[in-house]
Length: 113
Length: 110
Image (cartoon, rainbow over all chains, first blue to last red; front, side, top):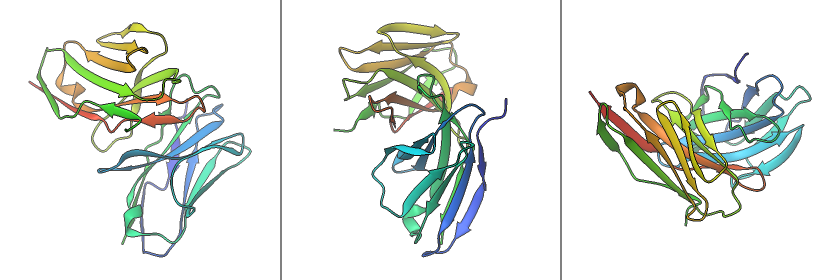
């Protein structure tokens, strides 16, 4: 069974640019969540999508957005990048009920210079 | 008050000892509780989940849940150097959002 696939693995962007990250969940998982992980802040919840609809949202500015496609693949976009956006972005998928926890992808390491 | 508080680390135990990791949560409506392990440079992986009060055992790992005290713990028996990692506790809110603690870093010394 294929795991959660995130692309790209590494990304270097300049302040002010925008970036799009991609995530393919485990087959059959319709829930996809995005987290930002930094050494100082731990795992911070960005948003969750289920069946193409945003189901939950964290406390991030509107520069962070996402979407989910009919095949459950999800993308996350960050516009007008800031230095503080440098982090590991993790995508995780789970079953509809979420009771069995997340499976995480390997993450995208974003560096903003 | 943070939604999830984990005992501050780092925690260091000798090989073969019991490692005890603790977590408290503030949302009384939480129903599902999880422990994830994250090795340095890797993404978190789920190792245990628990829904009911009491203990749940899986090999060398035991999760303990006390909803009245809003407390969940993870015991690792016969700790091995390969258990050295950061352990994250998490719970699902009624809205289904998963909230994570900041993690406790465990080092098992040979």
